Image (cartoon, rainbow, N blue to C red; front, side, top):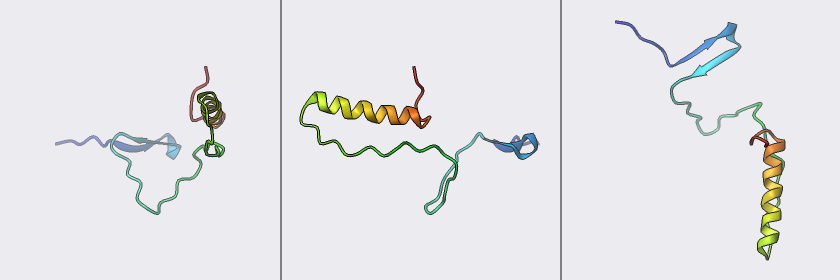
Length: 70
């Protein structure tokens, strides 16, 4: 009987592959992940104003590397 693990470390510890489920418990801390700059709550009173606020949010996501640019 053999078993193939779904989660393993390779390349001398430089790479960890998660093939199963990664569960992050309450209180855990993740370091090194990109974060987008804060986006203030929208106070837009028109659709055009809301579009402007939304586009600002998308720009911040792209700048943080959380969304691909075109």
